[in-house]
Length: 172
Image (tube, rainbow, N blue to C red; front, side, top):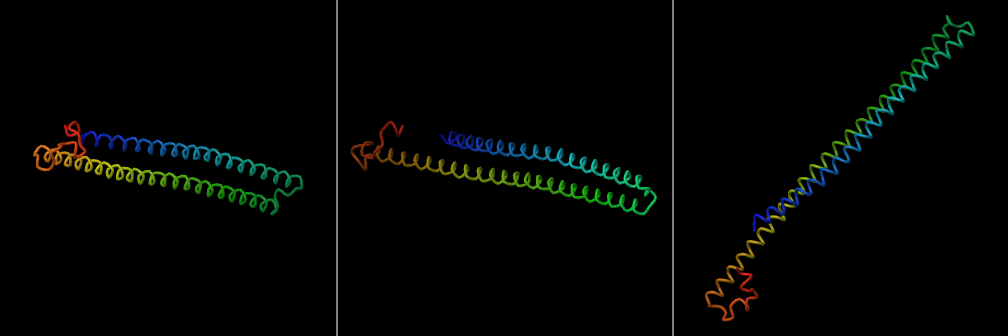
């Protein structure tokens, strides 16, 4: 009977562990999908910025050529401002991208930490319940043995099992 109690609580723990692991894996899959979507989004954002920079550079060159300013300081200043704007934009995108990735990694770390905590808590809970069930079973067995010895000894009651509330089948 003790082995059945052990097996029952071990099975309950395995079921809980499986549920927790499934939930963790589902959450990790969602985070991985968010990360993949974010990678595409930031890649596209960089491409848009690059395309805008190329268009602005060409527009500046076209304007300067139409106004015979290609060799002037204005041309150099405009190109430099455009390059600075592009560098700032790419820097912002890269910073946002790093923050996005760091946030995903923090969420994964928290998810794993929560999972480990939940597993340890479940293990502890089921072990405590198992120990209580085993102690209750042993106590019940001791009470049955004591009742059996009292009734078979004849010293306490003449009615046998029926007065103690335990039937002969229960003792067997």
